Length: 444
Image 1: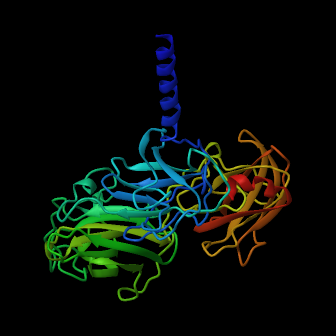
Image 2: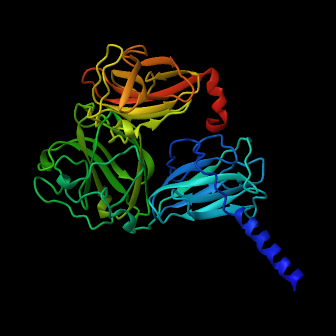
């Protein structure tokens, strides 16, 4: 009986240890540091290089189908080692797992339908739950959920399109946007035609959104699918008053949109624009001939967002090699730091860097910057900031660039704003020399 009891204990212990391998958890070893939003209809990756033991942040939408692969049969890229993939939500709960998918040899593949809207974490490991420094690419594919006339997933929520322009939600188009014309939308009568008089098409079931421009031109990549009648969707952008849609000015129109394509705003056919940075514009969505379709778009540039890092306490942590695109259009100066290096601060946003002894260069001299920026660097804490230095025009044109030598373990607070009252979009990059290479394990 004693030997039998020992055997049972051994088997329980064996299977308990083995089961850990089906639920790998690499903690918060995120690479890249920012969340990736997969595109639809194409295998792609958050980065070309990941190591076993790292975690990819992925933005997901409830109802959409996501595929994750290190297998050549799914995405065309094959890892050189025995991979396993574990998918968890941002609270650490297990969502899906695979090791040695059928037909993939020692490589892995997950097909998962999202039941949440938010961020999930894909953990990459070498079986069994091991780490390594072998480079691999993890391929990701997304398929829109719903079906023809099945836009239920996209008809509710604070950011769902409104039936009337004055109720249109203001959206952040730097994030992937999903919608549907199958949400019982109606069309306003009046003027010379239903809907806005200057619309390039004929309105049937129109809906409205609005956005704030961060550049004089905006480019959207769009996909329309799951159409009940295979007719498509009409997209347009208007300038004007929400209560006077018949006198709105149309500045861009895509008519009809079916499949996928690119939408440039303004498109040069309507009005004498560019867009005005900081101004609100209306997005108009209508089913062609009343069609019921799901649609998705992703902005390539030019959209203003409400920055999360508008306060020092919410400063975004930067690592060597990072690039962040943001703007100060919707930022405030509520906790603007004291003047530094002869420059006075205005409305801006915050970043933080932990010193490691390296020489650090911060720069807005990048393609994504479209206005006169300033960069400020401080040490200390949010309640006690000490000026390290600032810059206005050391980059290309009116962009900024500053280099300082960091001390190991010291927190540096970085503030980006506009010169005077200047506003716009900026692309902030950080590069390091010398001791920064010691961080290679965390940022590849």
